[in-house]
Image (tube, rainbow, N blue to C red; front, top):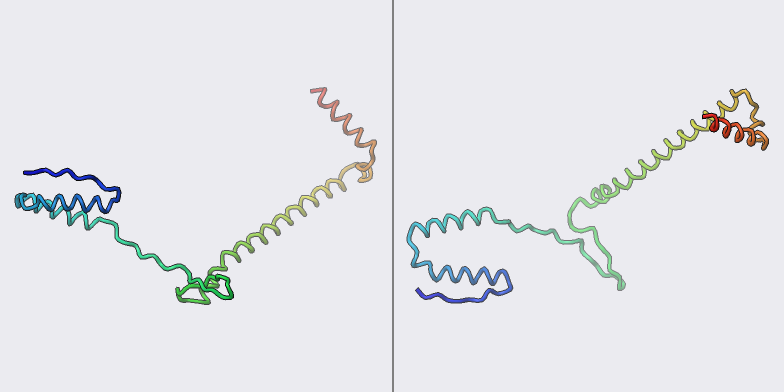
Length: 148
């Protein structure tokens, strides 16, 4: 049996063809049981190989007055597809409006609580705007921290 030295090409397909050619040269010398096992292995390999995936064409591009524009494609459904594409946008807008309403109500409740606390307190509201009262609070706060 004569052996041949072959170089491996860079291209994977060409490399595969070179190996197949080499195997085909020695095929007549193989026994029946080996050829049957090889045939079964080949059938098994072909059954699990990746199937070619059909790629949908991109939206058509049309030129008008020197400008490229994208079309809606040929998917069918026309108006319904356009409406369905705006649904996420509408959901986003509705969510933002709901957040704004909730935040506005929360701020209103907080302000109402502060106002009711001021009105129910023993001090009149004018005392909180007096600069002397602010100084009084600072002094009392520092004395409370010193006592700890």
